[in-house]
Image (cartoon, rainbow, N blue to C red):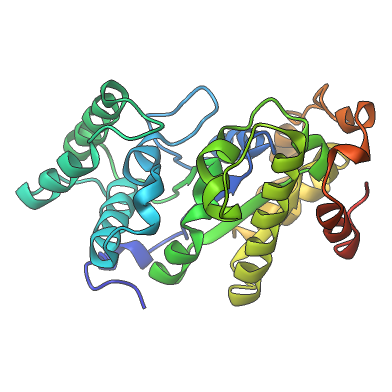
Length: 285
C-alpha cells in the first residue's frame, strides 16, 4: 500500500509516467517524445534528458538497504515536488542533507548542485498536471514505486541484447552489476550480457505483478515502425495524440549507427547459459 505520507493530490488528473532501461537502450528518444507531447519531465535535466532530481534522491547503491520508511518519505517528496512543488519543511531539508553525502558514483560537488536545483524548484516551481521522468536505472526501484503509487505507469525500454553487450555505455553494469549478479564484474561483453539477462528476468517478474502498468518498448521495433510503436505507447500511458502530432513525434526517431554492431563480434564472447536464456525468450542472436 502507498505510504501514509502520500499527498492526496497525486491521484488527481493524469497518471505519472516513469521511463527506464539499460544505458543506450533508447530512453532518451522516449523522453524527448514525452517532453514534446507536453509531459513535464523536470527542469534539471542532463544532456540525455535524465531527471537529475531522481538521480540525486535515488541514484545510489544503498537504496537497496535504506530504511523502508525513509525511502517512502523520499518517494513522497519526489512525487510531490514533480507534480505540485511547495516549500520544504525543516525535516525535508534534513533528508536532502542526508542524501547529499558523497557516494561512489556521484561526487559531492555534483550532489550539491542537484540539491540546489531541487530546492529552487520547491520554492519557485509551478504545478505540473502532466508529469513523469526518465532515468535509465529507474528499474532498480520500480517495484517499490509501483507499490507506492497505484496509478504510476512504467515504460521499460529494451534493445537487442548483443548490441547492448558491445556498447561502450556500461556505467550501469559497473554500478549495479555486482548487485544483480552477486559477484564482481568487468567491463566486458560477457558480463554486459549477463547483466542484461539478469535485468530482463527481474522485469519479467515485475511485469507479472503489474501487468497493466508495465510496458516493454522494443527499441529495435521502434526504429522500424515508429508511428505504430509510439501510438501503442501513448495509448498505454493514456496520453492520446492526434495523427499529425504522432507523425511529428515519429519523425524524430532516427536509426542509430550502432544497430547491428554485434555482428562484428563472436558468440564465443558470451557465457553459454546467457545465450541459452536468449533462446528461451525467443531473442534473436
